[in-house]
Length: 588
Image (cartoon, rainbow, N blue to C red; front, side, top):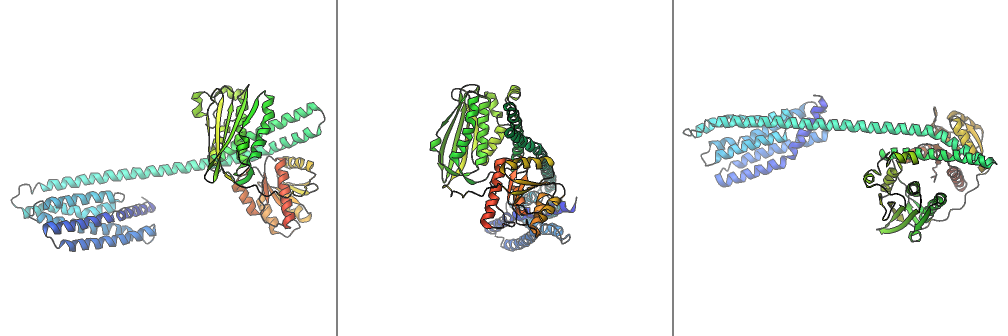
């Protein structure tokens, strides 16, 4: 057994004995009162005082050992853990001798009960440490072995006095078996805890490894997706032929689908690892829901379906919550409704109810499709699970949308449940908790970003070209750098209005490059830096902000988000002058 294991056993035995102190002291007081009252043994109070003093000494030592945590001062704690229980047992068990020697009726019976009870208490309290058990039990065993002699001397004519040997040996054997059984049970419990802890660590390591793998794959996949989307958008805007525009739109739709699937995988990975969070910011609830529903109205119309919205005028306008995640869940529900409905339509019912100082938003999405088989309802929210193989063949998808939507709803203080509609079709009921708020002040429009000189730093040529394609329609002139070292050289000789910095690059990464920029004295020391990262989590953004970055956009690059981030940092710079390493929050 290792030293650390011994120290743990010592600490456990000490804590167990300390927790038992009040019981022992209470028992001592009760014994003193009873024997003084019914047998006239006045000296019993001297015995009680001696036993209490030993108990207090043991308690003081226990407090020191527990505070110390482990035996850094040599073997004395383990020795004291054996010595003091021995003294306590010797003092307590000594009372059995005068009781067995007494001619008072039932006094020997009381003495035997005291020793038996004391032995069982020793086994239970000290079971985790064998040495403490032996030390505490030794005095009681000694008293049991000499009691038959005392009983024979006190009652020479009693025929059963010799039989006390058998009773004493039987009691000692029973206690020994009990001690062994208890120790085996404690060892099995400790082994089970150790195994459970080992498996927990293995599970945590597996989740961490999977999260790292997903993050790496995400970063690698977002590079070609960014290029596909940017190239398709540029091609769609430049080619005059209608057929070419159709082909460009097909590429853009395929790229958008790839981005959706990738985002689903990332969201599920974060939810599984407990790293997903929702933000709380003021937003126009009516506008957000209207934008989402307006986006789906023509989509449903192309399929010959009608979209009916009920109760939109009754919901509050401004609330505090996560508008993006709310739109994500509603988009998932509308996408499912459109996917499984061939005729009829989709109805969306909106309602709110007050919950203290919060508002519970209730959204019910009902379609006129075939509904959900009753046997499939229990596994509807199971990740990667589809209702049947024909769903995968006909509609595709990862089987993550509903699972992610439910978890997001729960993160927002609500839930997502499914049922079959009252007549036909499927019915999904979404609830989220929001905080009511007043309309914020209307921000002053920021400066135009046309004509800005922007340095684009990314180790991948596809990413650099994709960002350049996105910036060109805004009238922004981009200079490209493929590494942090090259970026610092350019930043030391040319003046830029803003810097788009890839976070994860080989060699000097984006955060290290930004720290070096802020620490220098070049002409771009105070230029705003926008982090461009495929891992758009709060933790990553906090690390970017700590490095001196001022905003962030996620890959694949969304032109609207990039425009907002550039406009925001430029507006902040024009408001406060040079911003240095001061952090400007981004809405991207």
